Length: 566
Image (cartoon, rainbow, N blue to C red; front, side, top):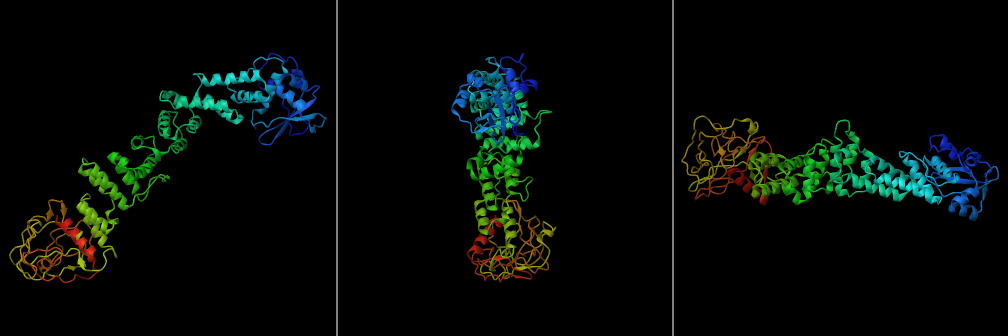
């Protein structure tokens, strides 16, 4: 009764009845003729979207009587093909390549051959067949069958007892069959149901990943964060937890770069949100949005700074990640500290510890010193680290660490500063000798900003220098000052010089502090009222001099004077 080709499998309503289709009371009217293809006088040629072809034998008079579509097909189409039995073949419009096509065509033909307009019974779980019948009934112009299947679908979509997964199945099948009005109706219902604040968590908890993912394609992306966050939270119940790959797939649908600082804050404290995505987004948001920078909490800002400056990240960064170079990190931290004056000392220290000051240029370090935001001891540490780097300082004309006693009343030249090839300054003990030590000459220095334990001036060789019993600490800044290391101090013989302080940076070799110049000529000097002493001799060293020169050298001198002396 079907075409003879193996590629033309038999499609008839009888098979549907016998193989799980609707169980009708009995075969009536012309159904036996459909089953046996008795007296068939035509063949319907069915082509699907995957280019497969099936045929089914039919009776033209019955189909023409029941359907205007077939009346036009048989009366207006001149067949160009026949089957092996000589029956004319009439092509149908191309139908979807659907696994339920066989059953759907069988149900539709069964309804035609029954010669009744009774509703056919299809279990509601067979949404693929119900949607398929709705589609074929529209093509075959069977208004009563179309109306019946349409009513079943729409009632199920709007039924309050229908689950989101049932509604999604209808939408999915409608998309496969090309029934756009039913698809759109089902999707709209899903969005109303799952994207509404009134939706209870129980409904979300039993909604499948596939169903929820579908609504993201039909909702405003700016709402995705709130939707996904709520859904993942609802699915965090025992036995309902999403697999990690599904959770990750949902979070990757969220446009984190479009989030405001409030949403980023909420994501930051939510353990269900991948922290790497949150910090990736924050690294970009805070760096480009001053509003976000100023409103971020300390915890979020600190975590973002740590993330944006990390050498190695815990997870593969997303396209949102923006690393911060040293100068940008400095500007971000500086702005945040200024905007949040209530930060405690520990918080400020934590933030500045993330800024690689040693990676700033000398000009940037000097600017940072003038600004006064960064800790002075950190700036000094960074400067010494910068200057001890080969090529960082330039030609030698100013020796970092040349401190000397000025000449009072016309004092002579100070002793030459020198670099000793000795262990790092940090290896020497802090503090002073247990008893005061003094050296020749009287104290008349005008270096009034030095700690009271240090004075200088007077003598022709850089003046007397008194070492007091207390540690050399700048109480205003709270940092250790690198006044003296083994070597010449204020023109003293280095055989009896004592270490009076240590520098919290690894200087190697250490610069001895001493003998700059009399009067006002030295780098850091006593500044006697009538001093006109000669400049100190150039520094000598067994290693390589670390220095800066020219205009920049003067700026560094000023930087050191401001930083180290107060």
